[in-house]
Length: 162
Ligand code: PNS
Picture 1 (cartoon, rainbow, N blue to C red):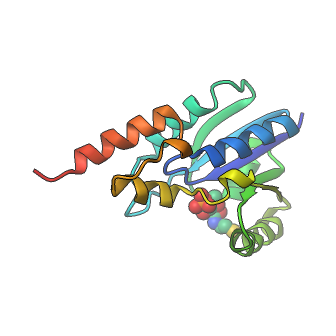
Picture 2 (cartoon, rainbow, N blue to C red):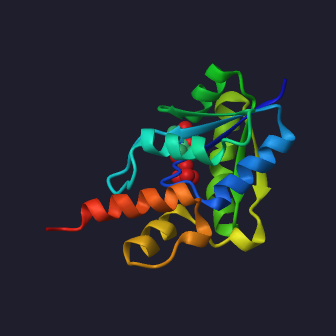
Picture 3 (cartoon, helix red, strand yellow):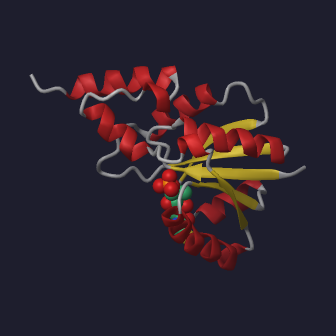
């Protein structure tokens, strides 16, 4: 049985992520979506919240499981019996960043990385831009699921002073 890991921060999951995960579902028998649990200082959502939003976004695919991981991604891959990491690539800048990680991961463990080109209509969408646009009152509806839209609205409302 072929198994792949789709890792990321997913803060929050965007439709670009969901597109890549859905295409991984077509390529592999089982897909483990792995949420990095090293929460950055500016994270909007906790790892558990991100997992819940991903589970909702991937509910249509029975072959997908969503989990958190900490430590080295390749150690997590080994623990799951997974030999392939799947990553989406939006731009050349993504490639430059991802290439070194892919080569390091392969050198460390033999786990290889398969890159999927992001759907062109979502190539400019990132979690960081979604957070920024939402925090400044812009419409992020076209870039995230209804559940994520609702969760971001609620989280930002909590942060309004006074
Ligand atoms: O969504 P992101 O920010 O591209 O996700 C990055 C993530 C979590 C996949 C990456 O930072 C990662 O693999 N972290 C685990 C730590 C690790 O294995 N570091 C060595 C990479 S060569």
